[in-house]
Amino acid sequence: MKFSDYMAEWLYGEDGYYATYKNIGKEGDFYTAVSTSKFFGGTIAKHIITLVDEGFLLPDATICEIGAHHGYFLADICEFLYTLRPALLSSFSFAIVERFDDLQRQQREYFAESFGDVVKLTHYKSLREIYVKNAFFIANEIFDAFPCELYFKGDVARVENHKVIFDQKDDRVEQKAKRYHKDRGEIAVGYEEFACEMEGAAEQFEFMSFDYGEMQARSDFSLRVYVKHKVLPFFLPEDDEDYIPRREFFKKSDITYDVTFEHVKDAYVEAGVDFVEFKAQMVALVDMGLLELLEILQKNADEEIYKQELEKAKILIMPNFLGERFKMIRFRKQ
Image (spheres, one colour):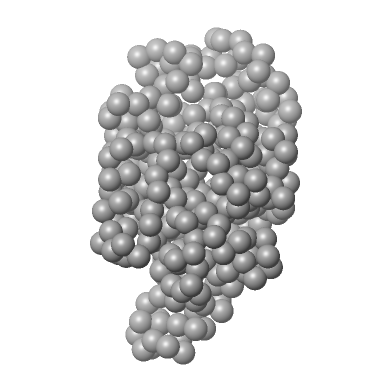
């Protein structure tokens, strides 16, 4: 089978890695910005309020997270909206795009526990089900989870019994490889369709996403597996002491790769959506008001709570943690 089909089955097939709820953070395979600090969602809430004050977002806009897993990110946004501008919590509509029924159930239960009936949450299986006038779409680590093809000097990979064999030709993949100056590496599949679906989901919207990668394509394979916070290169040699047969990871561990943000940008621009900016996560969060939120906490909480939250927030912006490795990309349809 094509590698993209193999990766889709690994992550999204029956009993796939993302098909059922997985712990994220200390008890899981990896950390995310969401699992690190509530102030990640809080900073997005502050940005949303800025968009309302600027007139881009309407008070009855739809706030929609794509691929929410447990629902922590959107819930953190709601919590900070309640603190900073409580009227918006009742005037906004809140939604999650989530294809899996089990995860939808987890998210509904978490929102019910957190907010009772104060926050009305709507679920959609895909962006194709949505059509609203005004929206803010948010996603964290979504583009690295799109299936990809593997390309090496003109050949495209197939998978046979978990073994990767480069002996296929695919004009579409080769054109993408040439466009992004790759002679080897991952070619994501589905960015163009996703961008077109979002373009059709709202008359006017802003979309913000965070992920790891660079604007320009890296010159080698970045495909890797996360197992209990250990990173294993997908192409680890069999004689390496950390080598484990791929079949033992299949559907049981996360598989991911670095995002080529130029590919994301091109997909949205070609869909008729304006590219706004691309920044390191640390710059983006500071620009959107993370430090101001921490100052508010310092004035209103005891010193021990402030210190605890400050240490968590530092992980979001410090270059040697998540601050530089992760990037923010932002688009608008106006």
